[in-house]
Amino acid sequence: MTAKPPSVPSRPVPRRPFRFTREQYYELGELGFFSGTRVERIRGEIIEMSPINWPHVVGCRKTAVLLEQVFAGIAWVSRNEQPLSLTDSDPQPDVMVVAGRFEDYSGHPTTALLVVEVADATLSYDLTTMAKLYATASVPEYWVLDVENRQLHVFRDPQAIPLPPDLAATAYRTHLTLAFTDHVSPLAAPNASILVSDLLP
Image (cartoon, rainbow, N blue to C red; front, side, top):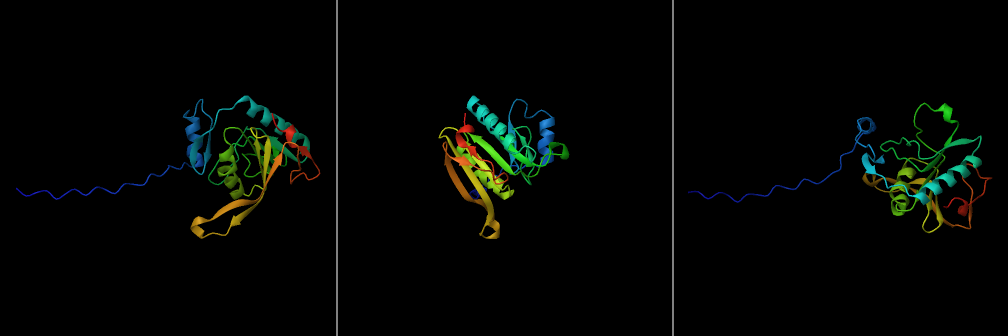
């Protein structure tokens, strides 16, 4: 009897996430796949969003109300009502300020003057993944309202990082951390002055 040659283990296939197109993402939503779940599409992946607690609700509301006053007649403010349609992502910012009038848009906006995320359980994610996402989309200003530490992170000046083409990335060159006693003036409304504590729950 001839001995069988030893079997050669197959090479493991690297695990890769499945990346959904915008059309696939919306079709799944229409079919009810996300019923009862808050999700957003980031870099083609469908990400489940954190539950909304009351401090988050209050922070979003206070921020939106203040920005509506600041940008009255200049831009409109969206409060977690619709996504921002980027190349490979459909994030749902907690608050965003969009140029022009709401009535002038026939679809979801593709850019914003200012995006704000209110962070309680998502601080690290908002300061890294989402900052890179909005910088790549050339959003000129991005704020992260840090509820727990009572701070406001202000990101400005998105710039490409000089890296090899396969590692190309964009990031914000300026990152300011403001205390609750500090004031901030949005780039698109430089004459306004907002007290950080007025944004916090």
